[in-house]
Image 1 (cartoon, rainbow, N blue to C red):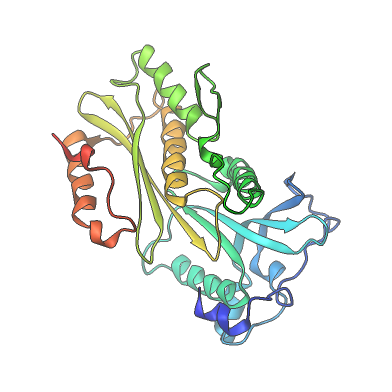
Image 2 (tube, rainbow, N blue to C red; image 1 turned 90 degrees about the vertical axis):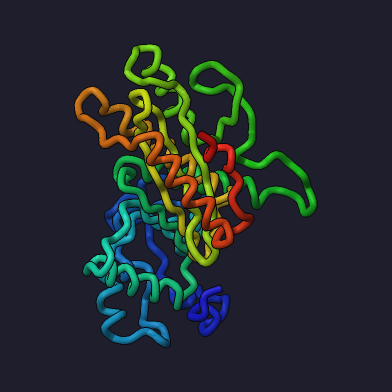
Length: 293
């Protein structure tokens, strides 16, 4: 738990501002009794400066944008925020703003899901991701104590290509697209492969790749940060699925752009680098089979 959250206590409702649905900006989604607003500012959510936050931090943070805010349908109170986009460059003004926004969010106990990807964007992928997380959390909260039900990600059903598989795999469309691209001789291999890890005191991380030409792969990596938050599914598996979504996004543009590819040997060396850092990972490294020549 963040120290800033403990200083204000677990009841942070007095710090958060309800977002009305009649303020002239229509919600982008209503789902599971929750209302989703897009493109808000931190100042729309936090109504006054909390203790421990300097004036400079406050004035910067309240101007910072938030991609999505999920609110209780009955009260309009913010439940959590979702941010999607590339990581801010180290030492940049964007990174400093992000740190100040994070400090304010921690001070008031705002739950935040941060998805970092060079390819995924809030405008293009956000509503689908937010709807998925709302559903996953609702499913997880609906289980009985001690119940050994199938997890949300592992529910089986009919996939887009007609096979039976996990219907809540966000990467299912990308996997089907890869098979179609292979049949059309646009890929060297039809399988979207991947791995996932969770860093101690850090994000969950997912990798996904497909072989475009013999020995040359299109690779995507996604980091998922859960700040005082739970996705309702394993965050590392979600990161890998989102990386597959990003692969699918890039496959759609294969004919228009020459994608930056990574050699299979280089990718294997990077995976071995992850394995060498297994002591820094939660539950170690479970993908030794990918390190074999």
